[in-house]
Length: 267
Image: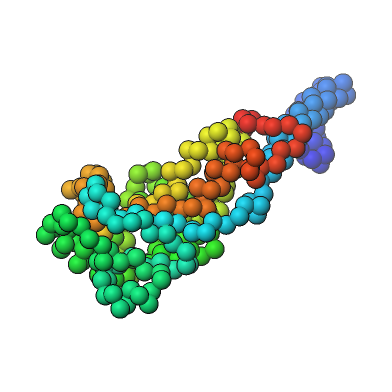
């Protein structure tokens, strides 16, 4: 509250009550000043606590691979884990050996062998076509659907950013590109969790795993209630966010710098 505001307040009081004497004004001014001092003290304490924690994200060494992709058919893992090193990664149904030999950034579902391949799975594989492309733009991750059919994505990071339900599943139409991981949002959440309780940062591991199904969706709005009930789907594990959480929970490698005192829950 500024002095000019106080002056207007006192002038109004004088007009409304001519019997208000000087002592009453001094008492009002005194109580107002006390409130101002309390508000300033409270603001100072909060700012002091917020500045007690500093996170240096630059001290962490980037991982060799920015993600791993695990392919499933129903509840079975098919093939080996694919490690993503290049910025752009394509997941499709291309099974041309000549083409695959020239593409280091292509994870071909069509080249994987499943001894229990059913007609339903085979038909779904064929519908995948050119599939999906992931692009790691710095630390954000974009996804583009190159298939003629829809793909379905569950990203808890994207759900938080869009203020959607935690379990919400997005249907991505053919030709559409979306951001499926926002690193700035992830950093803000880490800072918030650290303020509350450092150990609670592990709860954010759920944001480091993205699930995506081809052709068939899952959830309350679809026939398949669980992703394990869909014929072709992948799980994407994001290494850098997972490494950041691990380093925070490990005191020897933690990027958190504490000044004088450690505050765990104060807001």
